[in-house]
Image (tube, rainbow, N blue to C red; front, side):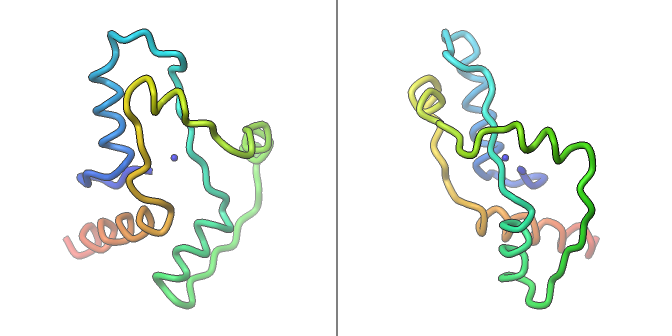
Length: 105
């Protein structure tokens, strides 16, 4: 859905593209991208062997279960030229790179 600070990744680039099209008659004004905790943890684990996550679901779990299983991005593609520039593993690599920089500072 997670843009890392200062990077020019899909989230930031898409946000700028969306803002430039505010005057257009957009069909849909929201876009939601979700990954499951298991998918995110697996991606982090591929980058950081031995990584583990433990969690206890809270009230947000019910909200998440109300979301659709997949997102149709066809209106975003046609309304404001959105396109995925990279997927989960690239997003996690970008996030970890920025976290390493932040920790080193």
